[in-house]
Image 1 (cartoon, helix red, strand yellow):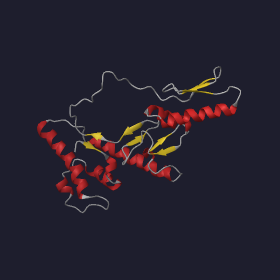
Image 2 (cartoon, one colour):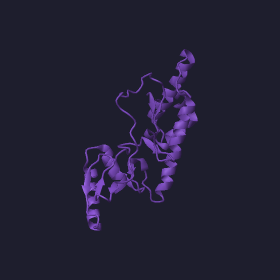
Image 3 (tube, one colour):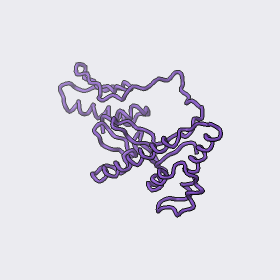
Image 4 (cartoon, one colour):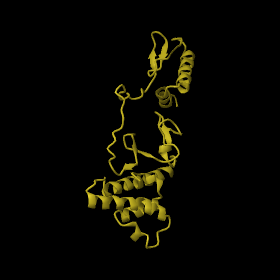
Length: 214
């Protein structure tokens, strides 16, 4: 195991890991394990941590260390407790399994949400952060194509041109017209551009639709 993912283990197991990080699993398994803690999980996590500590001791091979593992566990326990408290007030039990639109409403399985298992949490600025912790540096840099560049934020609104009676998607430039003097015509134009954005094959256009038209 080169990457530790706290959400893959029960809350009881994560708390148990905190108490025994660095202990040899053979010793830990001599005693009866608490309810909710499996021998397989102990061997998987504590065994790997102990192995990395021993390798560092005898060969000088660096790894992230027990403090980083402890921090990763505490982050998960903190977020899980927060989610449980929020769910009592009507929020989804696992908020990262949803995408959140511009009005703060959740959409389960939406673009960018966790799928199948919990992988992320959302910080106070609304950014998704990974729970996963790489235990060792494999020395492999992530490939970044030289022709790519960081994407700009998703726009907040449709481009409206009231002189020409035109609405435009700010992501792909798709336009539709409306009669300036008619509110109904304007509403129909917004409906057309919303339909276009939701059905687009461009992921960023669909993200814009989720943000603006949900």
